[in-house]
Length: 505
Image 1 (cartoon, rainbow, N blue to C red):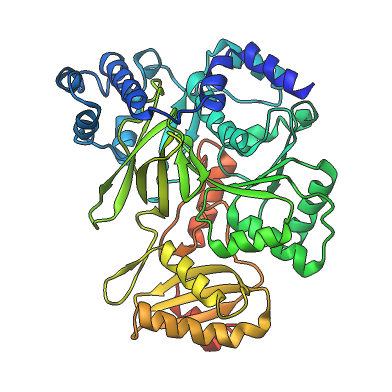
Image 2: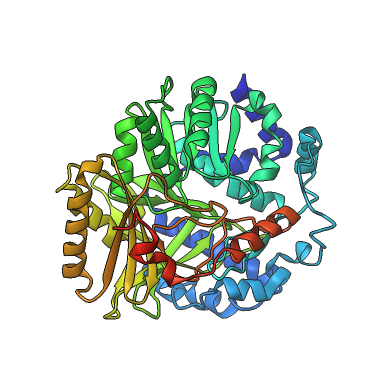
């Protein structure tokens, strides 16, 4: 019945074709010529009907018409790449002509507590919806989405879940922090979740009561799929074990995304949710989900995005993404400022995949040693793996704080506190060998990582860095939340002196 309701809704809203093309269809053979055709179509559209891009691709399209696929992609890689700042400066001129001069506030789409009226507006498509990225500079990029843009982005999430085995109508529980993304509007659909199989469980912080409430919700609602961030998922597993909570239902599928997913987190979650399949995804607020876990990396959806890499100023491979078929607000060679490696692989059975490996997150997501060397999340993932081989896999979570140019605070959550002394000594030994013998490494053991989830969670936290989770604009309560977080970002190194905190070792 629920599956039929979804089918009716997609047909009523007029997005059935988009659902089939994005969610159900795959490109696993002969993908480069198909991506090339999409790129050429996207460039022709932007070149003709987009103020910002108009005329910029005329020569490229003419010169590249006779090129081989290899030469075409080489030529494409030499086109200008655009940053978030470029898009922010361009504003509405990036939108296709028929939308560029509309006032988004006059045409704004919102649920407004009336889902049936919202469905009628979705069908007509006469609206714009604003959404924002988090912004590593604390300045989000506001994207004005049309019906096609919004549904295309939404269906990339469906594609991840579809790949895992979930189908529309099967129960899905979303565990997300409040006041982030556009989650508050979506929650207004919650009274109708019995018709759609969706349920939202929002939280302000991860603590004992939050986890108790979630476990009760899981046991009652019995979702097939749980959608959650990696660190909260790990804290859920930790609290269930610590308090001996009764987990009567194991979601068959758990999809984590939005953060670096460490091996220690995966191992511990799997030890508690023993009947769940756990898979990772990668995407961005403005583009949707772009890749999903496969063997030895994350497979890029070849019918959704084309991903390249180019060295940034520090020589690290920075992803440059083109969102295919998104003509309303084109993202053409968009510099995400995310560090990762991308490989094109061909398999013996004839399938082909672009695979993202070694995702480090934002290009600012590193610790600089006193010797000027950068250490990214993958280094600390390896560090924990090495430590866990010595302490019976007792480390289940790590957080690294920059406390000054020569000082790091490393917070651990241990499954077995008897290993504290060994973790301290081995951490200092390994970091002295691998990072610096002159830096100070302060080790602290905690039950929960203290984090405001209105901000983007990172394993590495540097001084002065504030990145808000997406969608933190356009609402007075969210603007207030931003100012609250920023007012708390004062840094005083003296508070971290050993005498000031008894729990600091």
